[in-house]
Length: 186
Image 1: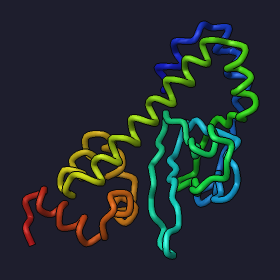
Image 2 (image 1 turned 90 degrees about the vertical axis):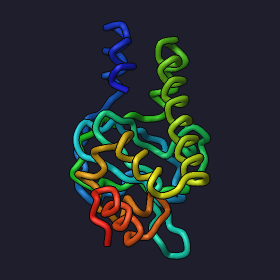
Image 3 (image 1 turned 45 degrees about the horizontal axis):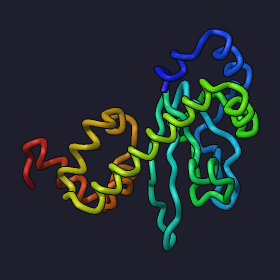
């Protein structure tokens, strides 16, 4: 996403910077709460966040957001409806907070921002589409390799139980695949 922002003319980049409020959030802090409408977007400069929902009392990981990514519940943010997700800081986070109303005003007044917003929406859609296809059609080993290829930082920073939840399996199943891939068969 930094690449998209880098394409802005200097004057428009300064306008964008003016609507970004730098803020620090502590580990464990909830940025978006299920049931509330997401009216802010967070550009992560340091730290990472995880979106999740509760199903039958279980915490189900929806997505991981790392440095250089915009984090929010896009369905809530774009659709102006209550969020079905929680967004939590899994480390201390340094982020630029962007208010929805200010961003929409930028979209209306500057074509460059509309183009960036469209590209961000396309990127988010493609990520969701690919993940849904994988979850419904591929085995755990293929899903695991997809994670390695697309999100290598996950394996250095995210607890295994969150990775397993994201992939839709129990931690024990993930351990078996990791051992198999490492060449250590139980």
